[in-house]
Image (cartoon, rainbow, N blue to C red; front, side, top):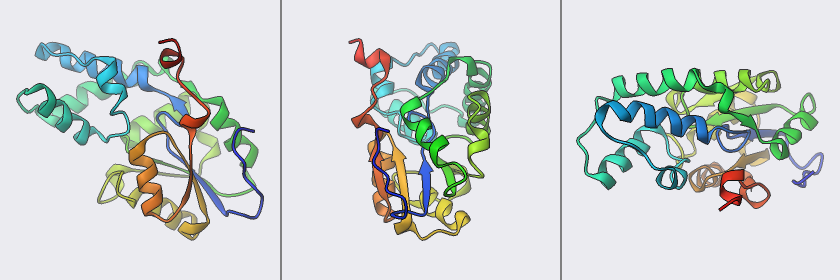
Length: 203
């Protein structure tokens, strides 16, 4: 496998969802574009791809600041985004170099998903890609005080699995997520070292 994990050197694994377990960027970007269209706005792939580790509010804060647009009614906007996303789960693909790790260690050590995403969307994503049975524990940003890069989602995952943070190994794909893992006192793998989206590799 692409990641060196020695049995006995850790007690649990925690995976980010979007961009780590699954390549969901096309679905998320399409959902944002569709929700922005009635407002006469759009979101280009390059801008989005450099910020995909941000939580929803941080992403919109950055969008409003960068493009000098008026603030959205967040609740209405998120509802539109989520409706489009849940209707386009077929655009999501698992990232095998990571999911192979999860399947290999399933039943050997506890495993969790810790995401800045919306709980309903994370659950739907894992179900659509048939990964949901691998994870007993799922923590999303809405269930803790602070999203990544704060360590809250990772610390909560460790707490729920009853594992000391220093005995957890994290798989991530964003700088924000890696910072969160570090602040939680966890060892981490940056999957970008071994996996690049097809669309990026083709540039």
